[in-house]
Image (tube, rainbow, N blue to C red):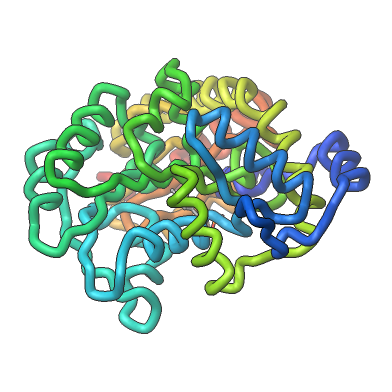
Length: 351
Ligand SMILES: *Cc1c(COP(=O)(O)O)cnc(C)c1O
């Protein structure tokens, strides 16, 4: 039986065009920085220039992963013992953790809340930003644990104004920034104009095998380049990887609309079951609250797998289904079928 794997959009594999670009990439030593602060790999430089231009920022820095790009950003903005405004469901806090761990960066979290729509709540964001020692505010768009919720341009702008009043910069974890931009129908540059630094992943829906890009002012990126080196993220002939990233940016952005369409299709079918609470599907993530079943997300993972559907538990109460370029409409039909069979077998749970 064919298995539909909706655990993550990191399951994309490089296209032929990416592999060809990697094979032919012009490379150099990215770790050799010239007087202008540019690294020595021409393809990495092209990727960084392209990303900066696309997002309307002065400069960019290629990083091995989103986790490192976030850590580089926080370590560039904050000193040990500083505080940062965030909410507990941000990926940087809930999954990555390192910026907040004493043995790594030791930043203190000051939490704000999200509203009923899943977006940062402005009043609580304002009071977190105004807390003594808070040197940075973090936001995430689209919001992974929030079920792919996209923070609107108007809300991003309100948050930017609030942070500016408090005199602190905003860092945006835009691992799925282009999903948010496509879903909201706004230019990505517009959306990130509300952030002083932004990180996005090449290796998720955009389909590259590797890497994330951190963008900001020339001054911020020069500092971030030093931070990345200290963290062991300085790379050599990284143009091999940047070449795939350039193809991902050229060919991967508009295509995200297909993933959103597939997720909406799947979400519409699953919304028919009132046994689950479904987060409104806005981008490429379908998030189900399965807590009314009395069973854990791990149990759901184990029950669905033999029916041909791989899903990812998010905490014990949520199940995440993610669409990406490797899965099409036929896979959605299979996933829906697997769910139907699962419900036939397990309806008693809700009685
Ligand atoms: C995946 C992800 C990251 C981290 O990216 P990696 O490349 O996996 O390290 C950061 N933030 C969010 C919201 C993510 O989904």
